[in-house]
Image 1 (cartoon, helix red, strand yellow):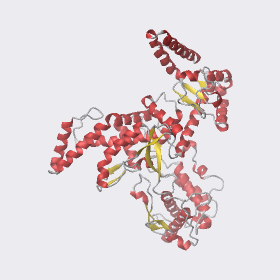
Image 2 (cartoon, rainbow, N blue to C red):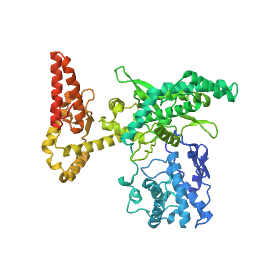
Image 3 (tube, rainbow, N blue to C red):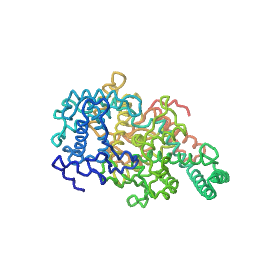
Image 4 (tube, one colour):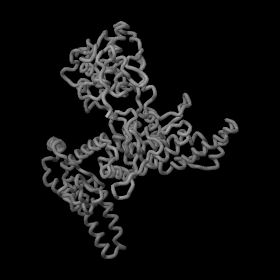
Length: 608
């Protein structure tokens, strides 16, 4: 472990403390050592040489002293943070600097020449000013989470007051937390953290189609275009286009919508959208953060044996930056389903010329249109491109408007789908998510993405709460546990039982580790001592099956599962006419099971 640098005792020397290999805390322009993948170059710089605002009520000298005090504070957060807090990373210093520069601007307009003048009354005025500020996107005011960051900066200044020349001397928030003062509650957090199911299924299904059905054709077209252009340029720039059209015409390749890939424009756009599809598949079926995906380099797929089985599991190798002290991040591995392996292969083939030209190794590269340089794709650029892909493949609207996709939403959505395990609505994506959930629980990561596991557990708790609420209110349920629930849930039913039901569900989630595990044909209210599948902490995917679960005391089936049991009855009944006596006996037993379940859940009259 790298030893923590000792804080510099005298305030006169903090300005000489190193900020990065290229500068010190006292410099007017900071160049920070931030190596997180996906950041723009300007996000690593910060300029302190700014004049007071036009409506300033303090002198230029006072404004300069506030800037100096701000740098001193940020130095203290890096070298000597409050007890129990980690040292501020370079990325965190940049974010705090942005916030504090805005606070200094507000102070100048308010006539506050020193941080020591900030008291609870000043905080109230600051809060009013913040709530009236427009968001960066220009749609409404800034979020309560952003206001929290401003108030937290002031609170930290107060916490560090003994180490600073200028800081608030009175607790600016003596009676409430920064979250409470900002009004940051569950109700004000803003956008849904995951992609709505119809939009998630649509964009993931289309991305899968692009990489599985169209990927080779698009890579071939791009290779032909690039080679033909190179040959044409040897004979002059005007000939390059003719060579490209002739070569593509001879190849007669067909694009995603059945259109001919006969020109450079069509091929380049198809290749661009294929890269976007690859990103979406990796994010959607692995749950990696955007910085982790954008850090991937050539050779990102690695195979490792699973125990002593001799079977190899594919992993994506990339770098984890969050919570890691090393500015270069830490190498980690994530379980990679087959479509992800395919996506990485396509990315390697598409990026090969850019990597060869630039000497870079990243898989997500782009040619900068302003300077003609080959540079890594940024977070912001990737978000724009995902939305471009969604428009191109006609992802359906949400509440009458296009869903605003962002890179971080796929991680939340992945966690939600894996946690649910009930994939009846996921159509062709079911097997991919099933693989992901089984691989995560049974094999885990070589590394440990604890945050993702926490997200999945959160979503699993939410799914358990929703399922419990429905089951406790149901009048008809199938399965052995279902029969027990219906026999004793009268007090939870109807409007009169709503509050009792909510209180009971809250109690179960808080006081027990109960989880309800879904599958296509029912729910498992898992209890190890009565489990027939052999599961220890949860149902064993290899041991659970309809016939096994119907004899298990943990099984619950509700009306939403009727379709599965009708299909199962229909399929087995169709085999009866040609079956021999022994097979017919087995088929009749299965048909009988289905009919008993359908009768239990009130679907015995369902027609096949």
